[in-house]
Image: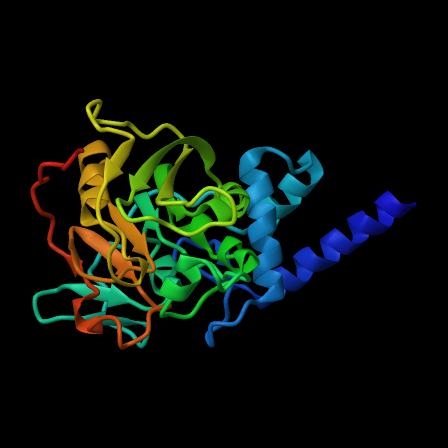
Length: 296
């Protein structure tokens, strides 16, 4: 009886999500995780979880068929808009065509797809004695809110995810990677020469986790997994890691919670505070040639 009740509840939620959704240019239904004010939409979050289970093969055949019949785009087709979009309230376009988006919904509406996603989440630390907590000069997010971001709508069929985390959020980061539709594959380590903080080991490193969706190609075979760079301002990550990502992976590239302009990248920075960066430099710039990576 409980299974029947659960199944009825699931179909009721599907009906509510369908009624609240909007229809895209490709005829499919879409319901974002966040509403226009940036708040989590419970129905959008529920649908995002169904999409994750759908793509991981953990959803029952009956529910898969129901989702497909309703018209939701569970595995969006790769491709870009046929014409250059006009700027909206959620983006800024410079005179040279460069672009900064402050809402991921802008990219979703345009059916943008990225083969590389580079993320430095603003982790919410409970222990304010950690250096990472004291370095955070921007708004933080809970792990649940990060996991609920509509990244599955932006990841291409074949895509790499590079996700920064610290020791305290390692499990959360792996859970978020799974929620976004990626399988953990490897990691790189940023070693900092300065002594770190910690309740056990004095941690002087951060982890860059590598996730994979589909079968993207890894181009470079000469990149070290551990590199040493001094600590930057406000937990900013060394630009050399971006360079190594460019050498190893083909774009298009999307950066989440970006801090500065990056040639050839779309940069999302709506979690940034104005005292850290001039937002006019959070843009999508023309592609550039790959630079030489720095190794220790």
